[in-house]
Image 1 (cartoon, rainbow, N blue to C red):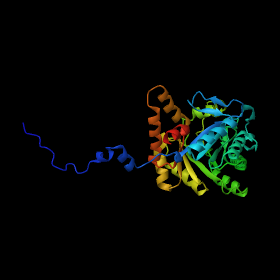
Image 2: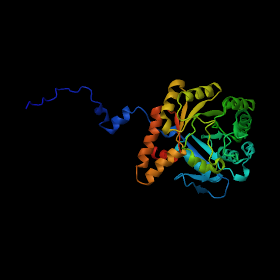
Image 3: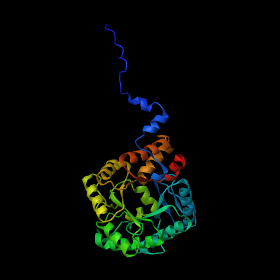
Image 4: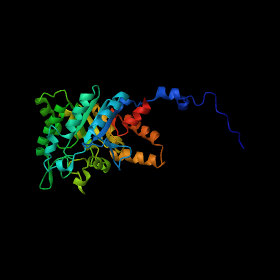
Length: 335
């Protein structure tokens, strides 16, 4: 039997494991870093007296009263989270086919925005512009003869954006996926003297099956029933179309763009960021977060480790920041 020759001195000359050998070298050569400044915290607000109401399909996520919301935003600010995104749980009796409550200047979301801005400075407040929390049918737009109408919906979205801006909203986030809505909202804001209010467009929002827990949280699931939003949200099979959607929103005046959902659409995030070099955000949606949380609760995975890994994946794909329901808990650990 021939004798195995010993490796020659210096073989191999390139040893990638050298940079992985110690924790301090791994930190030095890390290509992406996750920090508290990358986080946006989505929060649900209700108008009842109970400080907190659990959401069965979203472990460790709660609907908050306005007072509790203000307190929690204060905690987020202390931790260094740059912005919160507020979502209203609208009373069923206030919902209607025409979504009039969406542009009531005293509605729940406007009250919540005003309360936050009155109590805290130095933290941004973002709110969605879409009609699904306010419609009796659960859709993001107005229904006519069984179809979502585009241009009539835009008129209501502009009214909604204005009342939110007047309440003190810093970032308007059109999430409806109607054609032309960013341009119309930008024009309406500018006409009313809100040229400094930013727009983060849900530019590539897919008709995903991962939104179920969110719809439970805001109470729109019963209204939508067995319906879907495939005529206005994007087909999960499409990638090139996402670039067209994003390009239109940028041309219409979006300051930032978003891809939603997140983990299942990392390729879209990467393509958008690479092509447009725009501030690009990812939304780790309710279903994605709930799956991770439930698996952690059942001992299938180590939630803390997998959750952080999922957020690093967003950064690696090119995301400027991440909307995640776990923002507060990961911020505590990062600090």
